[in-house]
Length: 493
Image (tube, rainbow, N blue to C red):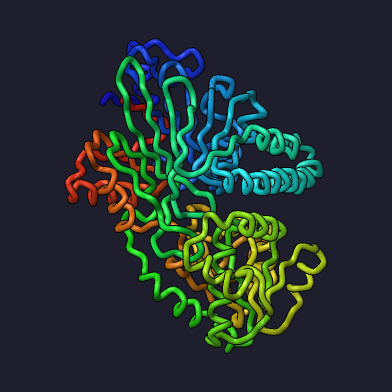
């Protein structure tokens, strides 16, 4: 194995790639793998595989974090998009798919391979993301115009999202497909969100073949709705996420009891329960669990609102892809019908109806995007609810650094919402057991199944403490050649 960092490359006597000034030439390795996002962080997934002079991008996600840094990183891709020959997309979450419109707008003309459910979800998500880009810039530009400053342009617009959607090529689980000459791939169910996939790649260059597995985001066994993750075997190189690489989730059976306790406590104070939730996956899982609790009579019958137009569209996609469901969910549908629609549940799309929820003064549950409290309608609900001690904010997913959700988890007494300070007087509860990511044990089991003759394991999509700790856990298990790449590092395979 050979390894280069961006700084080291500039000092080495290497011929730069014709498209990437910071990438070593293939003259120095049969194949090359470079980590350009989600390296020692959980956002902006983007990895570059180079073989036979062809460049394949694994994911093209939006970086989420400090606003100015995110703006610059997302706008300035670390390569020439015209030099990318194909994209393999693991799943639809925005930190994995969200910058595809920028890639296309800047000249990428190749195929984007994804499962059918991922392609359908992205059609909705990327359109919504374009709308958010346009709306946020419009809001910022009002102030900049009044201050006489130069105006910003959105990262991309709706036509860019539509152009990206046209580049998708749908491939089912288990089917082998040719990505480029000498490289073929197959999607394996990842069990993270609808359509999520691990990717098994076989790449041949100069007579040598390498088997490379990329987890994308790996899901959990016995998680609601979806089938369990499918293992991969006999892998030479493994690229694994590590969001919870040093943590163990509560047992799945305790999740309903914990959610029941939070809901009943919130109702006992006659307040609202605000649940920031990603529109893809998490919202549907919460709705599914709430239905089970209601049917069992374990929680009060209070109004439940899913306030997110995107969630409505995504739930429609969920209904269209039962091939992704586990046996329990299929049985539930046969016995009781639609698991995403029931009495007491209302999907809110109308803006005026959404605003009216802020004046609703009875106990209720509001599920709204975004999951990290960085945009969307949930910000309006937080603005109107966060100062009332009768209300509860339930955080149910990982919160990246520098996000509003992370500040709430860390116990901030005051937060800014829409640029204005708000005292945090509402109860803030955290439930990591609802996370759709595998924990340390799940990740180790996946790596153990892949370890036929692992030459190297690359640990990505985790904050540095999680990634480095997971490398230690792999070593304890006997998988010693594990590294958490820094951003820009490249490895010869």
